[in-house]
Amino acid sequence: MDTCTSCVRNLWIHSDNPMKSQAFAGSALVALGVATGSLLAPQAASALDFNFSFGGVTGLIQNLVDNQDNLCDGSDACVVSVSAGAPIGVYSVNGPGGGPSGFSVAGGLIDATNGLFFLSPDPSVVIEFEVFQGSGNGGLLTSCGDLNGCSLDYFGPVSFTPASPSSVPGPLPLFGVAAAFGFSRKLRNRIKCSANALSITPSA
Image (cartoon, rainbow, N blue to C red; front, side, top):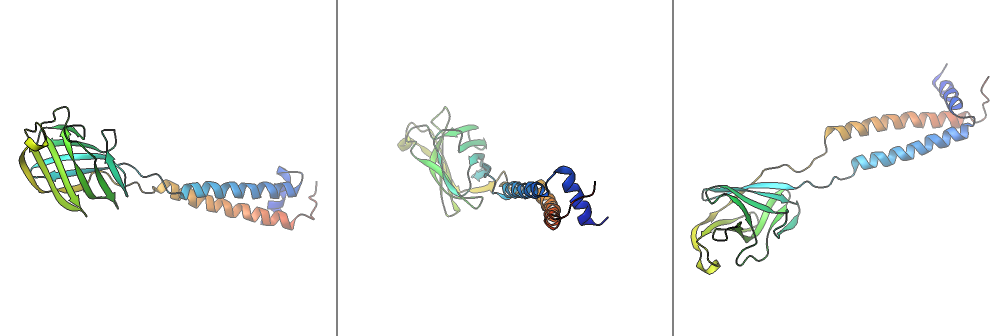
């Protein structure tokens, strides 16, 4: 039995009308196309984390979003913490003189920063970042009753290194797309066979 004959017989088994089989297969192809498109659709960007270092001070910046300005407003976005070289803990923008602060991220890298970050809940320790076009300085200020009364402990070159990778397509969606295209080819063959068999009446 050739492929088309087998195909026609299978279509007749699943429906008493080959037109219905053809319509069913066509609908399946449309659904398959939608599913495949969803696999290929861009995925939401993951939050990015960065290590920072200046003058012996090291820490972590968390929850930044790529290709946008990230405003640090004291929420879960844009969390700055120190792990060594200065009082350890989370630093926030809530403190004396704490105006708009943030990080601009482009292409998975910190491109610019502006702002003051105060050790929570102690506002006497301040970290300052001033970066433009990927290079700049970080500063450690202490004994701050207010910003005018701070003593400058360090202000010099700062470096940022990615601590978490950007999200990329994994292998499973790619395998799914390959399988979908293979199944699509089989359905197209069935549609072709059913179209050629519209005038054929199957034997009992």
